[in-house]
Image 1 (cartoon, helix red, strand yellow):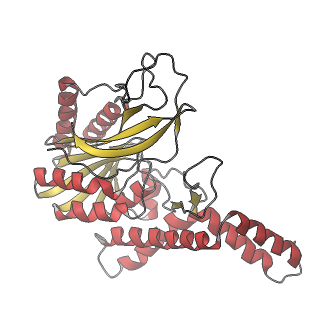
Image 2: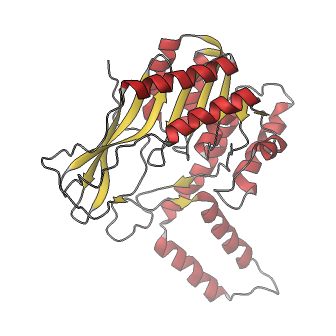
Image 3: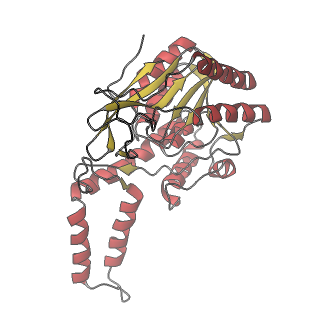
Amino acid sequence: MSKKSKKSSKGSGVVALPIQQTGATGSQATTQTQTTASEKQQLIQLIQTLEQARGNRVIVYWLTDLARISEAVVPSLYDQLSAIGHQKVLDLFLFTRGGDTEAPWRIVTLMREFCDRFVVLVPYRAHSAGTVLAMGADEIVMTPMGVLSPIDPSRTHPLLPRREGAEQAEPISVQDMRHAMTFIRETAKPSEEMPYTPDAMAQIVTALFDKIHPLAIGAIEQSYALSKLIATRCLSTHMTSPDDKKNINQIVNRLCDDYKSHAYPICREEARDIGLKVVDALPSVDQAMMDLAKFYMARDIGFPKTTARPSPGQTFKLYIAWLDSINKQMRAEQDTLVEKDNQARPVGDRWIEY
């Protein structure tokens, strides 16, 4: 039975379609290819090979750049876990750019309900919320290609600035906002070397608040505290000794505060230096992880082909994420509307078995 959710981890913004050559007919354009039996069998064989190399059951949680980690995956993840049953060790094969701040904690706690030991496998990237999710694992297995990232969040808010014609506000980096506020506080302190007059400082603050509402600034600061809370709780699921509290704080503070770019790539050696429980993938595991990753990288997400461009007003489906095991294969399908300006806008999505 297909399990549906109200929404999945979809990305924000719109996608520009290339100029239409041949329009399809009807309100729903049939632009995506169906998963063939041979493709599904290849996937199952790749997962089985990884399971044999690891000696554990594996669930794949693979998100394209159009998808975000969110709690919408939880019902489908529960179905996967129920089908697999309780395991001594359970591996989550993860690929993501990130997602909602709160979602990793819900995923970690659910995974731990079905295993004694939880491991995250990182073949390539597990950024942002993906890093926080990995922090909730007893062990993180990384290939030489694997990278984590800082965990300082970005935040949208109804009172934040919007681009002309945009329906949603632009996300703002929490760290960027904190640095701006620190600049204002430090510059405003009485000093013989103060570069700005009081009137100039007042103009700076006024200009900032003209762009960003004070209530939005408060919400952004709250997101920063929430990110630290979620990361701390994820680490606390396996760093349980009294001496670990100081180490947890140091890890969270470093990942939230020390890096000046949210896109900074944290390789496995640096992740170990930070204090995360990262191990190198054994050669057989490395090969199996990369073979599986290459399979997903080559998957067709259903983007319209040049011979059948959907016309304005039509919708088409995109496959934006997968949640697979040898027991069940599930994906997030996104309905996408083509607008008059040839922009493709997401209008809804759901998790289904395929």
